[in-house]
Length: 345
Image (cartoon, rainbow, N blue to C red):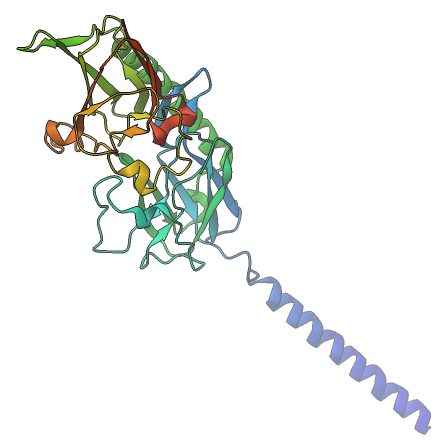
């Protein structure tokens, strides 16, 4: 009898336990899990976009845009920027109240300041300049968890800005396929813009001025900038230069440039070194020679367009003392093929 009662009691306890477990499971099923909240359910956990690129057909043409310029993501999404290069860019998010300095004026921003994840919009977050050479860089990634709109910048290209909007609802987020398609469409338009600009830039006749001593000053433009691209080339490449003439390099573009003659010296590998940023061996004008290192230093851009430093601060003159060939480069844009030659005869 005792055994029968014990068995009945055990059955009742077992039934009660099953009912309790069923109720708990039902309640648990009504709530989303920690990693699938209503704001993120169905949205991608990460998305990828591009931070500029160079024309695959002509590295002189650099697209200065984030591709696409704006994306909408759900809370908790990791955004990754791809740096194809070779023209470097940055992804820089400034804290409230801090505005971007003039392009290239603060070398501290050329180095990275990684985010403390997730990013909340209150601190400086910066990829630094990438890539640091001819090969693509690793992606720069930031996780956004607070709804709002976040504007970011490239610290050396003042017109290059983008936005990340963090939506409350996952249904408002852009899928990766849409982000890629929109970026591809923008690339197509901006490459056409850059190719047209380069054709016009390189086909413009050389500007020259007769000096009182009978010599000629030849003007060489250091690239040109459109709304969405940089043309990283010197033009025109004058071919009628004579000994004692002058060559005046002028930067009217939206990016800093150098005209650097390595002579028989090794070309500096670090474009941010004092040897590159400062004129050498001294201020303008300088006399060319086939042996020594000569450099304009970083000539500032005409930025904002038409309202940059005076032309005198954006130009540098070299005197051509004798017949010969004098090769030069922009140290900042060697990977983009920004090179030229003075031929005096």
